[in-house]
Image (cartoon, rainbow, N blue to C red; front, side, top):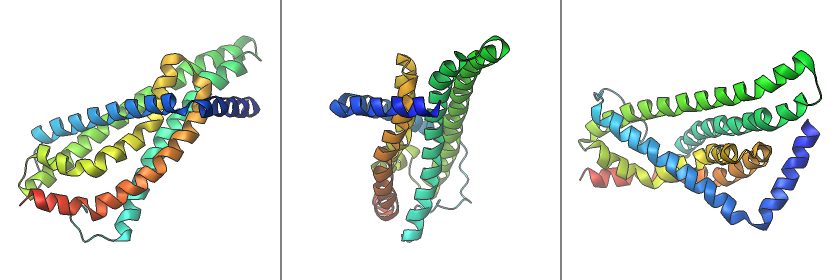
Length: 225
């Protein structure tokens, strides 16, 4: 199973290398759509949530240092890893398990046939739960921070966009690749997609972390007058 997966991955990478722009473009468009939907949900939650002014400023207005950059990178690396694992799970459930099922018969084949769709359903449910949870938590935090700064949640989100939008797009690249592959039933491409999307996301997340720590506080102070 691993050998076949590596063979599919090498073949997929070779094919993408000839025309990378359409592939990466679809991923970026999908990740941007997810990011904008999440930001819209965060704004809605922030508008209706009761702010907790006793909370800290979430580090956003602290004196910037490299320790904060590392903290942001670790946080985002965990989220990226979760989304990358969803891609890998999609590859296993949609490509490897069906191929493995052909080698069996009887009960074992039935188990392999049913395991794939169940695993895919679980990934969809877990990812949806993660996005809903993120919208709620970030919305609550946005409401509280906006109240502390005495600005509207919408204005606060505008101040966060320079780092938040590229950060979210990078984090959602693996999910976008998963969606593209699932719609086209190209599950065998997901191992390659995991590798490429993580490589594309990593430098963006590093840059976004520096912007969040060293640039965003100044933008927010300018917005608050």
